[in-house]
Image (cartoon, rainbow, N blue to C red; front, side, top):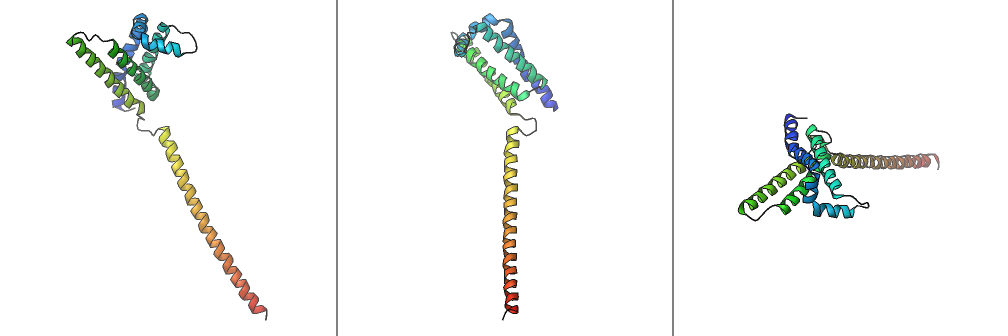
Length: 184
């Protein structure tokens, strides 16, 4: 891991770790704030789940993914989880912000920009391969290399086939010439 990643990952993850711990600690407030979203999620699940349980699960996912990302463990997966929670946070904070005063509207805009910025950062982190090719890149290049090798082998086989055909024709001509010299 480079020095930049060593420093940047914990810095980016810190906001998510603190927010996840806060969601775990204050599950009732989180459930109330996320109520419309959690109600839809609870209704979509095949089993009955309490909104507080979903709020704690969301907090645990955010906290756990933040810790994993800060430590550099499964960074792409944890960054993807953080991107999803960041989008959810942006939506909820935008929806529940106080906009009755100019200060409230300014705070709402600042919160949205903060969440979008964090979301953009973790989206970049989700696609960062740390200088190593991704599995998709490797698969695409393996397929291209295999196709190229196959074309080379096919070309070599065609070339060998043409040589063999010429050799057979030449041998046939020699046989005809030899037979013509032997037979009157």
